[in-house]
Amino acid sequence: MRIALDPYMHRHLSLDELPRKVAELGYEWIELSPRDDFLAWWVHPRAYPERIASFKKSLKDHGVKIASLLPMYRWASPHEDERQTAVRYWKKAIEIAVEMGVDTMNSEFGRGPSPDRGHSANCCSGQFTHESSEAAWWRSMEELVPVFEKEGVQLNIEPHPEDWCETLHPAVDMIRTIGSKAVKFLYCAPHTFYFGDDIPKMIRDAGSLIAHVHVADTYNHKASSGLRYICNPPGAKVTIHQHMDIGQGEVNWDQFFSSLAAVGFDGIMTSCVFAWEERADESGRYMRETMQKYVDKYWTKRKA
Image (cartoon, rainbow, N blue to C red; front, side):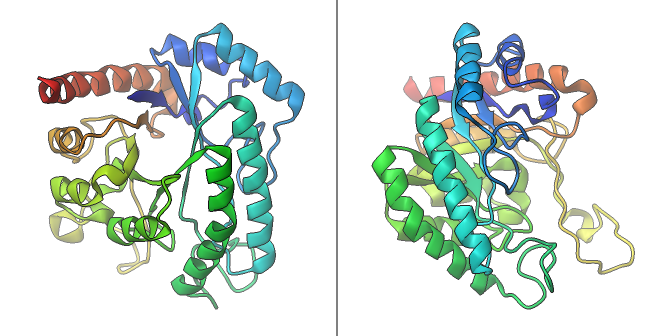
């Protein structure tokens, strides 16, 4: 199992400084989410040969490895020019993963077209439907899955609140429909209450398809008669969740970890907390220690 840190709260550090910080917080693995000097949001990768070589040296010097690279491109845009551009960026990002010796990438199903594009804001609104974004995503997968398979890179995909695919079961069905060993499912714990309320059942349903989990806590936005959050004006269409330290929200962590152990999970487990930039170091250390305690509790028990 790879226990990794998403160092988004440490993005002020240079790439060369990042491995030192990750090692200092107790991690041997990084899940590198988008950052402006490597795989930037939505645009062409900023990673050129000298930068890649320098980053690789720093990783080696500090005994840290990349568990996964996380690109975000508009591969589900109904605008064909945006979609084709996203596929080109994905292919470049895969090249970078291979150059870095990284065997795993992860991403989200996608939020449709750019919100700055005419007649659209957020996923699939305006003139577009969720079906049009799904159709665009399938076209992208037809182009990209053979590349992942050829290069020996695994892709782990997560449904995300506000995406055209927000929930667990259609996501799992689509990934199974692809039918490739190179494409697996990422269960993001802070999205749990968008997926449903029965954590053990949802993890059993996804089963061995789960190759990657994001670990962070969140509140149940459906609780207290839907009044956990009060939005004005009433009925406003908002999508909200948190990425907090374990224990600060309402995810049942004993159910989560014990269910993962029961289905034989042995993939990437990433601390994915974004809520506390003012205490990023403390949060990173706490998450590393707490995840390890759960791993020791449930995976050791399973082996015994």
